[in-house]
Image (cartoon, rainbow, N blue to C red; front, side, top):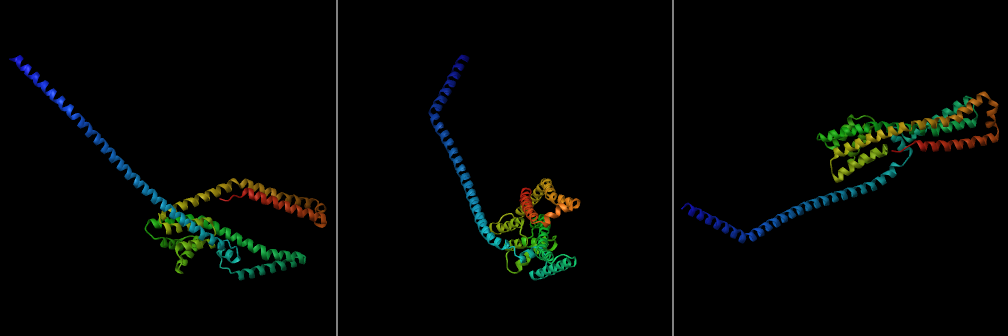
Length: 337
């Protein structure tokens, strides 16, 4: 009976295996179809996700291209306006240069001072016993050349002071804007508490708003009294932000960093070219030093150059060649950054 039970169990097991095999045989094709359908469905979903990502990426690219085109159009418009303003800024008239010095001096008063200085030099030369022609030459140089050189010196000194303080003022504006102040209040803060001459220039920008000008136009007008590329950069940043939008504090912070890097580069170039400048000064001064020493030791040897017509020709030729050499050396050791 035990053997009979084993046979029954074996038969039942074989029947179960056979039934499973038959079910697998009949359902295998259906299972494969469902598996392929699931795989196809997953690929379709992935493709749809890729399409959505591609569409979003394409939308972002189109948005960036539109924004870039808007910025380019704004830059072109600014370039046209700046070209028109540069014609006024490039005006090197006496009135414009007097305004750049920061002095409250009118052209009429300037001409009066020049005439007074020329008359004073003329009288001093006559009292010293110089000839009429020499006195007139000294008066001419003193009345026309010296005052204009002083104006150029004052303009350069004021611009250097402005470049030293301008990045610090931009940092104050960045902190003010980040703290929630509008641009107008940040400009007023610099105009009230800034250092000269930045304080005066920003006060003019604030005052220009009171007569109906916008902030970008007021910043561009700053170029009339402070014609520097750094001021031009600042005006362009303000104009682009007002037309195209953007993070103004970040833009001004980047501008302040760029201005400091330009200053460092100028200092580095000046240090590297200092040896060449010293050599140029020594070479340029050697002819005059040698002539003075020869005149002190042998006056009759040098006086021929001033009394003989051939000596006059030699002096004129030497002066021309010296001027050419000085100009060449100046162009070799001066760099624009």
